[in-house]
Length: 307
View 1 (tube, rainbow, N blue to C red):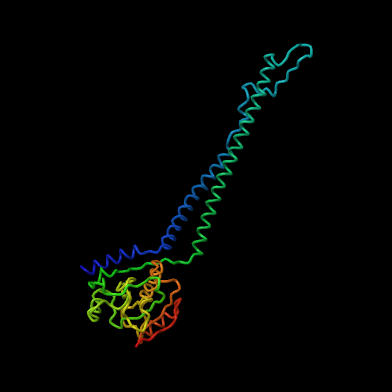
View 2 (tube, one colour; view 1 turned 30 degrees about the horizontal axis):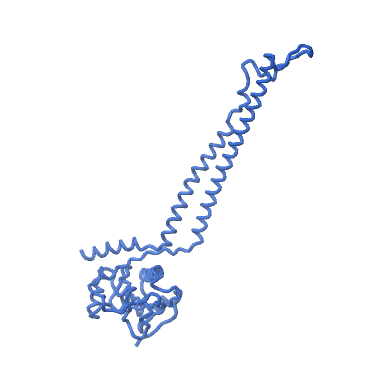
C-alpha cells in the first residue's frame, strides 16, 4: 500500500513538474490549432460572400415605371408657348431625373461600402494567415526544452529529519555538479525500500543531494537546501552531488536514468538553485561507465577521483 501511494504521488509530481517553456510550447500549439480552425471558416465565409456580391441586383432597374422610363419620352415645346418647369409634365420629368440621380449616388455609396468591407475582411484573413504562419515557423525554430521530472521529496520517502543536522547550501554559490553512483544493488521497483537499506548502512541521511533510481524517478536526499557530505575532496559548499542508484563500473546507467539526470539539471536551473555557468564532473574511483556517458554532455569538465 505504501509503494502504491508513493507511485501515485510520483505520478502527480510528474504531471506538475513541467517547465515554463513546455507550457509555452503547449499554449502555442493550442493557439496555432485555434487560428487554423477559425481561418478555415473565415475563408469559406469569404468565398460565399464573394458569390453573393456577384448576384446583387442593380438599383438602376428599380427606377422605371410600368409604362417605361422617362428617358424614352421626348417632349417638344414651342418657344412662345410660355411653359416652364412648373408645367405638370415637365415637372414630372425633372423630378424623375433628380430621383434617378440621387438613387445612383446612393447605389454608388453602397457599392463603396461593400468594397471597403471586402477589403477589411481580406485584411483580417491575411493577418490571421500571417500569424498562423509565424507561429508555425516559431515552433520549428525553437528547440524542445520541454521535460518531465518525477521528483519524490525528502519528507515523502525518508524518515530522517534534516532540521539542524546539516549545513545550509547557498544557491548563489552552487557552480558545480558531481555525478557518481552508489556502487550498490540497483532497483526497478520498490526503490524506497532500497534507499532505506542504504540509509541503514550509513546510519544517517544519504550523503547525496539527489538519487536517481532505475524506475526513472529522482529522490531528494539533502536536496537543494543542504550541503552534501559525500567527500571532503570536493567543494561541498558550492556543489550538488547526484548519484545513480546501482553499480555502474562497467555498465552505464539506462537511458531513462540519464534523461532524469538531464531533467534534474534543467529543474535546478529553472528554480535558480544552480548557476547557469556551472561545471559538470564525474566523481569516484570506479565510476568509469558513468564517465563514458557523461563526457559528451554540455559543460562536462572532467573526472575526479577521491581518496
